[in-house]
Length: 215
Image (cartoon, rainbow, N blue to C red; front, side):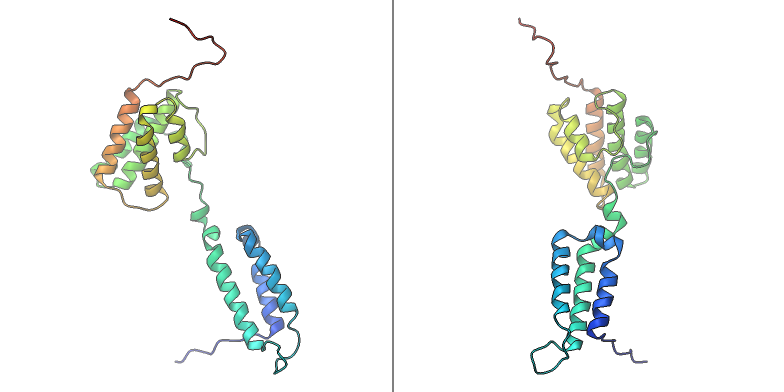
């Protein structure tokens, strides 16, 4: 069975279709500002093409319809990352898990590693080191904190581990939100960092209200 030929709208119908499509709330929220301005200018240009098609210089109606379809297609491509719920998902460390202990995260990570689920193991071990730091009051418990924010905050009391913290945060984001595979080496790096932070004494910044003690 042959496919039906595409329907080419006339100028008025094409303008109406495009206006209805891009006036939806999700497009108003997702469109970049420059695209909104370009769309407004394009609508004004379409408004000047009301004359009949012909040799007088006006654009033929089928061409207008094709241009409208192309504009909608471009808008979909540009807006797709913002319309995708996964792309807008907040990149916080814990998500909805707010009461899981550091011990539980370490146990889950070990079980996942034993089963060869390295991605789950990496994610839970990073969560373990963050929850451990919160329990020790090294950093305040803060819902919605991202892995990068956590690494920067922990780099203050653990300055010698700043580089490994940044690498751990990048690995967490790559696995948790980038759907990248992880291996045993990444997990073992996370374990060593977690153990090192747990054994280290955090450095406290000097209280500016206390006078320095001179030797």
